[in-house]
Image (cartoon, rainbow, N blue to C red; front, side, top):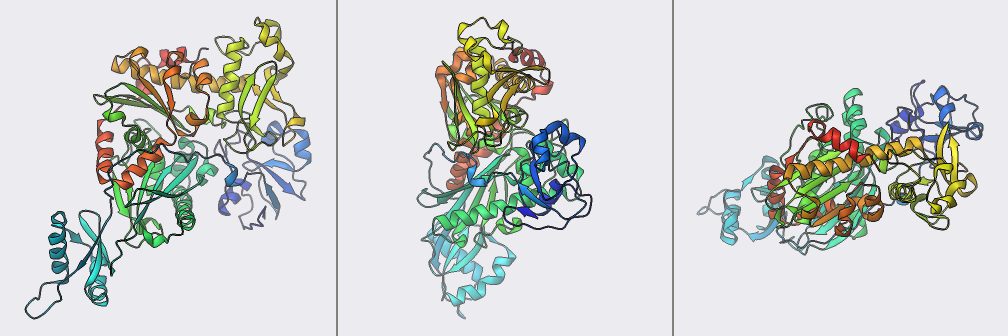
Length: 607
């Protein structure tokens, strides 16, 4: 039994609590995918004296163990038990929904046309379909050569006659999807999704006016299978029905978000005719139920890159019965439709000036170029900056320290204005920037002992320096200041993880610059997309070398640009076609095989 909520599930003896959570359809954040390396899947076993496993003894404090705290991935079930979940509720997560509005020509992917057909007679024995097409062509010549599938044809005779030959024809430009009785032209909605590795956001839009009617969002439920795409790829491949489980968790929550958005706008699911999807290549494949097996191993080949259109009913999404899903194209194995959405939203492909777009999510995608040429790459920077590889790291949720300042004393802010539970990515950047600017770490990233501080301003923070597991560490908050009673600190191991992440991002930028033969002076603007880019302090990013310091004055946050791109494709057939052109135009650079990457990565790790 899981609390809160009294969720009950029966599992085979010997199952782990992690497996029971999945079987119960609940969500628990498992950054390491259940390998037992992150120590963050804490749960409390109520009324049991279950002995801790060896891995739990290393990860948990004695006080926690005495209180029944265990790790979900390590705890085996050999009797009935009640378990308290520590996971924050979904609304506590700080999910970026805002997008930079971008005007586009309204020409929806789905169209409606009300017609009144000729009544059949002995002198007019044309088929029902022929008479419909004739009226459509008379009204709009572009409807010529439309086809109609068997399911719609089967319903046609009855609907046509019940409507007394006045119907609304629903088309997608090449096919008659169905007919509706009477004139239903007045209302037609669509919903655009950005499926991130960590979060999912859906925008319900009026397809006639282009107005945003509602936004719904949540944590991606696949986090219980691992924080990053490689963990999820491995789960899909290595577990029986793993792919089905990953797809089902995604489709179920997307269908729920559709319902929430409809309810918020007092609309019906039947009013929704089209759904657009952007996401990285792995999320794209898991959404469609395509194996990600070959994405995760060299040479990193996706099943499909071009746009995919299909019936919403084929995915179990409850919208209008003739509703369609339009999945934007991918660029490569690790640069997906979300990056296409960013390019679409920022007009990077149409810019006369050279610009750099950076989207740091769980994966980090970088695009450099203009209307003349676009080059892109991907780095695995996100897991560290989203807290997955950091001892006291966490996602941007209530209780996360999001910003810190090194002044006369250390001050910090916490999301939700409550007691701190950990540090999210923007806070981690601020800490590193402070270390660098105060000379508290050397160029190689070693956290120095107080005796080696040469900057007088750093002396104030000597009392924060402690020894942890035989190495220097920095105490951000002691147990009396935190919600869980454990201290929050930054260790040498954490700094190394952040170094690797920022080194990879910095190297990616330099490789793209070399590939295009440009200098920092040539880059007119740096566009930061996504939640991390929106909330982080650009100065901190430049201070640690994540972004070249010379570019600090040219940085602009563009919100959820991937979501903006999905919305544009939903509202405009021209933009949807343009997305395909963008995907085929972008040159992907595989960093792992680039001759200069290792050298630039080593340099990028230095402070």
